[in-house]
Image 1 (cartoon, rainbow, N blue to C red):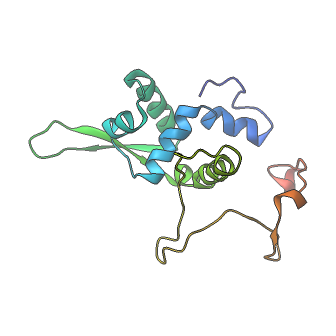
Image 2: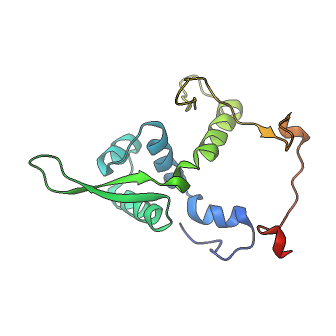
Length: 155
């Protein structure tokens, strides 16, 4: 949201960080995912974020297509906006889960909490994993990363 890396960066990680590389942004997404927060006041109260910063981050999340602004009106009140995650915003659940797992493992605290993702129907806890094309689980230590084109047919 600081646009330090630029939308036109060739690296997908740099392009992603251009959108979500700010801690407040990821914490807003976390609140929407974990607590179901949609209202400005909900985000402000749970995060303790200044209103001006929250306004800017929510606007950027809407502009980037991660949240959708919807107007609602409670009986006897003026119309207000709520912020609902889009498919792109919901897909950040894997990023939030990965950060949560990493923090729980490498930065644990006795008073700390972490999101637990579970299957919506069964309630079965889920975990993140690398899975090969043939369905085998692979250890992160066994992985190698190499650059590849976003659109392989263009290579």
